[in-house]
Image (cartoon, rainbow, N blue to C red; front, side):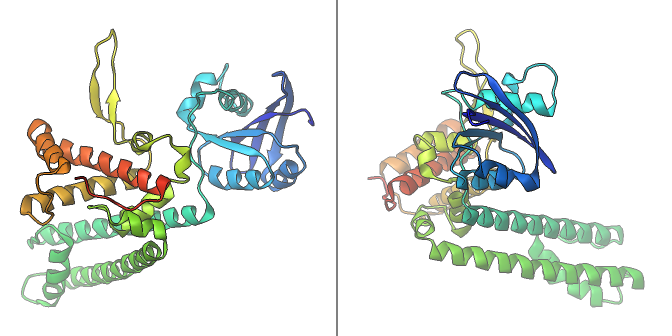
Amino acid sequence: MKNVTTIGIDLAKNSMQLHGIDSAGKVCLRKTLLRSKAPLFFANLPSCLVGMEACATSAYWARLIESCGHTVHRIHPRFVKPYLMADKNDANDAAAVCEAVQRPHMRFVPHKTQEQSDIQAMHRVRKGLVQARTAAINQVRGLLAENGIVIKQGACHVRSHLPSIIEDHENGLSGIMRRLLTELYEHLVALDVRIDRQSKVLQTISKEQEVCRRLMEIPGVGFLTATILLTVGGRPSDFKNGREFAAFLGLVPRQHSTGGKPRMLGITKRGNSCARTLLIHGARAVLRSLKLGRIPLGQGKEAQWVSGMMERRGYNKTSVGLANKMARIAWSMMANETQYRQAA
């Protein structure tokens, strides 16, 4: 085991399968390790290259194993699949990871610090609360429609009209339905409070982080987008350029070409869906402000690019193209530690 230079790990809930080779490529380690024994095992192991799939708990294990002096790379599962030999099992999966991590042109998933993981967790919790609020609003509108009362779409309409509907004793609602609607309204109020609390915490983080304050100077980037970019960006040095960062977020066309005939499809939608959604919504806000004249871009390159793109491709594709540009600007600012500068 002292001759191990590269280890592939297949992670599971209660154990992990190890596959290690030496400098000559000979297999010298095949082992099933319990979670509780993993820290001691890697602490006593000489420094080596460790690979694992980017899946649940992989961020934690990457931080822990790196703290023991090893070099850890996380790989997207789709890039490991071509190296799987024979049937799928834990041992073969670990061998495939060990083979994939040695490839010189393999692309790895950036690591996150504990702080970045915490911020990302807050975004996920907030997103779940927003989805629960949307589901509750739709349920309220559906129940009211079944009783002949129709409310317009939108959370503001439900908040403003639901209390008066509950108190109106001439609309034909039964006592059971009024009690159910009262409970749903209280549930909506509680969700609003929790969402507002999460938003205030993220807003505080964006004010405390110098990187977020610089990112919020980009038109269309608010505290939500700035904090999520801070988490998904990881270390800016993990990306060669802004174009690679935008591709990592799934903001580039998906290609399906053959026979020398290029064929570009919709965007790949890879990477963090929350960051991609916020960037596209921010780009739409910028386009809407440009249309209303709230952002004076004059006749500069940026205004010419937006107007030309709008004429050629339409509103939706222009929004995605502008989101791509925003992602590349954000990477440049994080990598070079610069301020936002508007195009001449």
